[in-house]
Length: 238
Image (tube, rainbow, N blue to C red; front, side, top):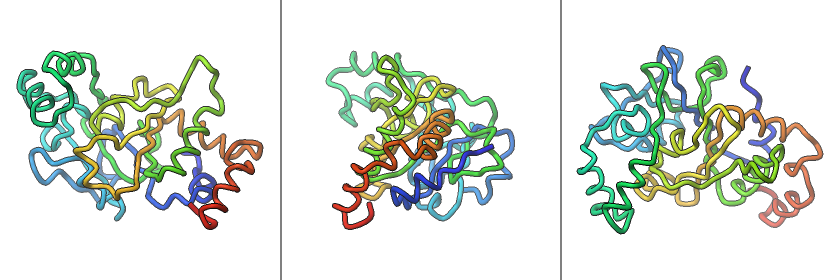
């Protein structure tokens, strides 16, 4: 059963909808659906549709630019991809470094034929793989602290990996069955689709459950005086 994030959303005044990445056998329960409009359309061109309650539907036939990271489908040769990322986007100093990064990054491998990205659907919780909070810097700081509430010093649960924006929704996290999270929306190519102050905090399903337990604990950092003072300093709300 999907846990209730209401305490987090209300305490931090998070206004953007929580966005789930689902790997499901049937897209129908996620309607209304949208599909990539162009062959290389960015996943985050659908951000406005998510705000309207719609879900992006990605398949092997219609996938936009997210095919390599979200489906494991290569739409360019390795050589062409390296040239594009290094020469056109300027992401690494040399082709060799870009190739090392490309070879070392794993794609998300969906179990079903449909990847769906959109507002949370409680009745589809079995197929949820990650949850993304779109937040400002203050909200992000609190979530990063909360993600560590149940962790030890040798098990840092939050990273900020280099990746495409869609890669940060799943592939860059690593083991999606562990309580992990990444700070995302750091891909320059996708930020044009977001409001300027927004960053992403993407949590695996176990981490999402952990954050909801953190929120339910009255002794946790979500309810401490430091947070109350920061909220007061911001005029009463983030």
